[in-house]
Image (cartoon, rainbow over all chains, first blue to last red; front, side, top):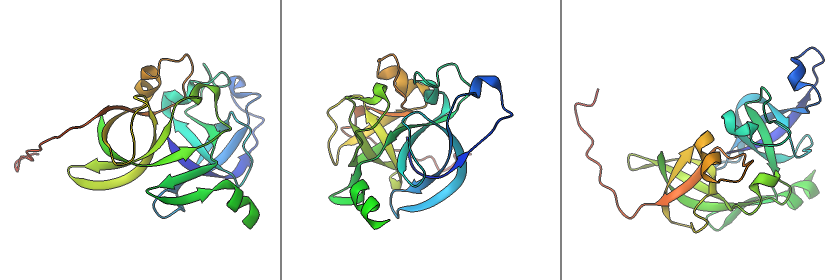
Length: 103
Length: 93
């Protein structure tokens, strides 16, 4: 799985009908070492009602179709969790409550 | 399958129902002896702790190993490594 930041939303009316009714968000992978956003912008299907600016966990490939919302849908990347906090070694590299107080 | 060392934990309360009850760990990948990037893996063994040498299975098989109907996971810890030896052939193409 990948830790990503939601950087935007995607609105599309002209799309395959199987994707209708799905919330599409723009996410970017975060490097857990340096906590910098790196990598390409990906369109990911939101299954846990995440918002822009939140740090989420995404799943790629066909495992992303393993949720009720994305089963048998043309999806290869979906957001499956909103991160509360991450510890690497003994250091807390991310805490949602701190992030919210900062903004 | 890939090898790695458990380096941390990830906690999230709001998540897909398939992931509930499965520990999420940060694993530092190890490629031919050198430490590579960090990934998040679901712990299928449910026993891995910090500093354990583990091997991981990726893509859809990670969902299959966790056996619940809907588990959106593309990386899962499936075993522990006691020791390994590596003969890196010089003439490897």
